[in-house]
Length: 183
Image 1 (cartoon, rainbow, N blue to C red):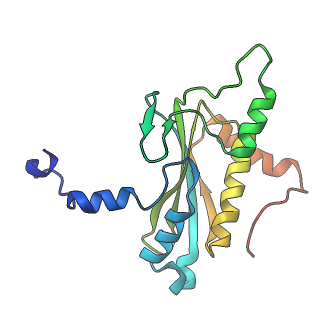
Image 2: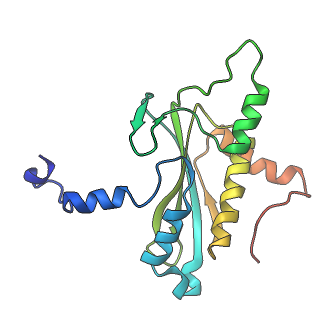
């Protein structure tokens, strides 16, 4: 139907199938996408192209479950990454269930080239909402992944939501923060 409408020109159905199967469907940082972006945009050929900005935003989505036939799992539960999941489970009262809730937001993280046309979503986390502490761990973990892939994160970009503002304030509270950063 979409192909016949001539509104949106899409590749052949088999090509689209290949695109959707080149990586897993899990949440978190996707190193397959990062590696593919490095190849497709020839980032490592030019040192200027290695300079990127990291954009992150939390968007509201319709909650619900989807069955993934590839992995045999239900997708739609909150998944904040291994460390944040452990912290969240630790903080839950005994009277509540320790099962993860249904996600109503997705934290999406994207990289954009400063001196290249690179634009790529490299991570996503289904959640009920992020705290600044959870955001701190996820962003710096990702910067470590990106810098191990020879990218240089020069800027962090986000909106003015309360957790995002507090995320920046966390950097000024303690001078002994250990994080990744190339000089």
